[in-house]
Length: 73
Image (cartoon, rainbow, N blue to C red):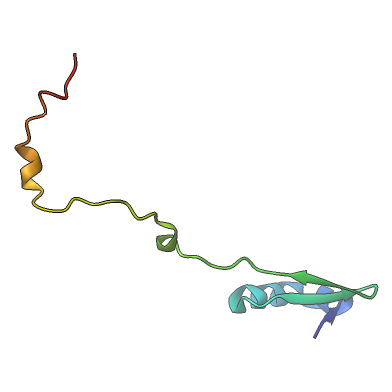
């Protein structure tokens, strides 16, 4: 159900906070048109991590690798 612009004006902060908390769009009717205020979808920072390859095996073995052939002055 869409709110009128007058109802939005009366309670704008409460309605905006409610939209943020619930994640539901706020619909406002103005001049026969519906305008939606849509809060962004919450994504945790951890969900945006990119999976990287990891070391398989014994990490101590990396310490004893001879890298002298790879080094160039």
